[in-house]
Length: 245
Ligand SMILES: NC(=O)c1ccc[n+]([C@@H]2O[C@H](COP(=O)([O-])OP(=O)(O)OC[C@H]3O[C@@H](n4cnc5c(N)ncnc54)[C@H](OP(=O)(O)O)[C@@H]3O)[C@@H](O)[C@H]2O)c1
View 1 (cartoon, helix red, strand yellow):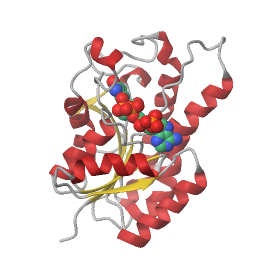
View 2 (cartoon, helix red, strand yellow):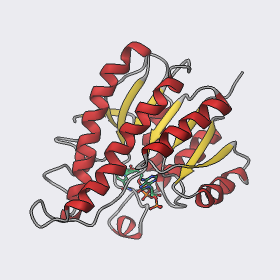
View 3 (cartoon, rainbow, N blue to C red):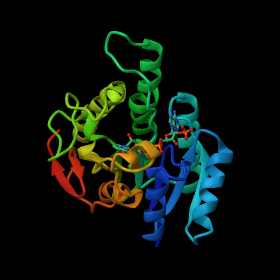
């Protein structure tokens, strides 16, 4: 039987959630395409998991560049003929604090990667997902983009820190994209969900503020990536439980 194939964007940071999701899916028998903007970073990250005995393929992919996304979709189609799981993990954390005192160019850059990047990936990879028996799209969201969120989660208007305001808005938009894409792709059997990992210790500042281990945050994403055929779609999850948008 052919292996399930997953692709993860922005998965090269050693302490990032993306690489850990690749590790967990690889351990479950998936073949995983680990991507990063620069090929050498994707290769180095992939090698760490290949050395652990996992089936990992590195590819260069910048989700902010439309031509690159299109070209990578063509490459994956040529080499594998399908995609089972698309994980939109790539994210910029812009250093912008305020809705008025703000550098709009930085805002647009953040939307290019976090929101339009995920949308581009869905656009160009849907034909490959349609060739899967159980296609899933996972948009890695954040409680900071939620209107109500889960119990004890920070939300859009109750953020952990002011400096994540632009980031939060990109995730709010991603949540809307999730609902709309789930609706549009339901007839093709494609599940589209937006799980949140919860505050996770992928950076020192997050570890210092009680972020949970990366393996735990990643599990929340893996749940949505491994949903069975006919499973829930258009939902916001944390730790396998549906939460409010
Ligand atoms: N950590 C948390 O507490 C937390 C909480 C809620 C939600 N999340 C979500 O979980 C996901 C992973 O978070 P993380 O903390 O693991 O983040 P991370 O380590 O910073 O990983 C994000 C990756 O995205 C890459 N990236 C940025 N722009 C890109 C582009 N245009 N094309 C391709 N890759 C791009 C970055 O590349 P570089 O390495 O080159 O910068 C980085 O490696 C994100 O979607 C985040 O919003 C995280």
